[in-house]
Each structure stands twice: as structure tokens, then as C-alpha cells.
Image 1 (cartoon, chains in turn brown, red):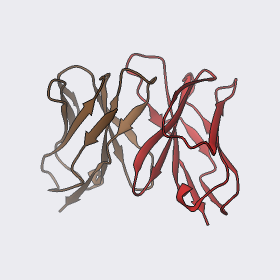
Image 2 (spheres, chains in turn blue, yellow; image 1 turned 90 degrees about the vertical axis):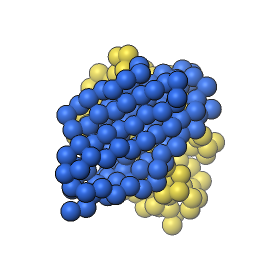
Image 3 (cartoon, helix red, strand yellow; image 1 turned 60 degrees about the vertical axis):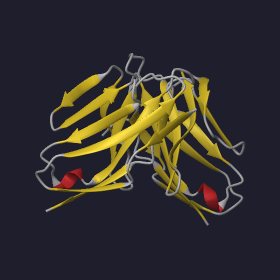
Image 4 (cartoon, chains in turn cyan, blue; image 1 turned 90 degrees about the horizontal axis):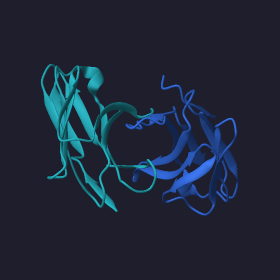
Length: 111
Length: 113
């Protein structure tokens, strides 16, 4: 099975940098995804990591350490529109391409 | 816009009833996934289809069933509905690439009264 932990809530200031952590335990690992979800809307894909290291995409970066079962999502130059829930999801080696999601981190960006 | 479409957007029904949710994947995607999201449970994987065949199953209740048709659209059937089935139901699709990123539709909000 898989178990994923993320902080429930975080607050940060507009223009700042925030790091959202995700730890996971899985019997087989085949990729980690980050999604952004605004209330009542669909999750939207942010990033994908399958090898150790940092993936950068504009204001968003994601890091993975497979040996530690750890990932983080880094958001730079925060904007008010970044207030949303950030979901960490792990894909295992078995069971097709299904994703197991964490419960999400609700990020609030304040002025 | 992810390219995945779902209908209806909202559905209100009574306990004991049956409903059908519909999903059309992105053009070219062969895999379709169904997820349930309720306030206390987060996003839960229900079932995956690939090119018409069931590929993976999650915590899907026996009262729920799904299928994927030859044109690749999918339907999720929910029967003998209970109050606890009230949730957002998302469909996602993915292509055959190695990354296999899932792209989500806008969801169907189901309210069982």
C-alpha cells in the first residue's frame, strides 16, 4: 500500500517563497506528481518527478529524494492566485497508472 | 481547459436512486480514470480503463460500476445511492507516454438528499 503525508495548511506572504513538503511510503515507486486545486475545481497538473533531483518550471519547482521518500514543491514570487490546495500524488509500480493522493496542503497567500 | 469533458456538471438526486456520469477523454488518450473527492476523504481512486478494458481497481463500492466504450468515452454508474455518496466525481485521462500524466475533467458534483 501507499501512505502520503503533507501539512494540512500553510500561510505565506505575496511575493515570498514557500516550500510544501510531502513524505510517502510505498511498496513500489514509479513517479510523484504535484497538482494544484482551487476549491470546487479540477486538479491541474504542476510537475512530475521520477528520478532524484530538482525539476524547475517557471515559478514552480519540485524536488524528489527516493531514498528518503520525500518530495517538496517550491513556489516562488507568490501571487494571490496561488492560494489553493496542493496535492502530492504517488504512482506505484503495480496497479496500472493509478495515483494515490495525499489529503492536500491548503495554501493561503496574504498581502 | 484540460480537454477532458464531463457531464452533467451538477446532479441532485434522492437516496436509493441510480445515476450515470459521463466522461470524454482528451483526444488520443486511451486511459480513463475515475476519482471520488469528498470533504473528509480527499481524492480517492475508483477505477481505470484502458482502451475499453478494466486496468486497475481502487476502493470502488459494489454499488458502483463503470465502462469504457469503443469511442473511448466512459460512464460511471452509481446505484442505490446513499447520503454518503455525495461528493465530487472526477474523470481523468492520460496518454501512452512514459510520464502518463493524468489530466482531470471539471468534475460532476453529486448531491444525494
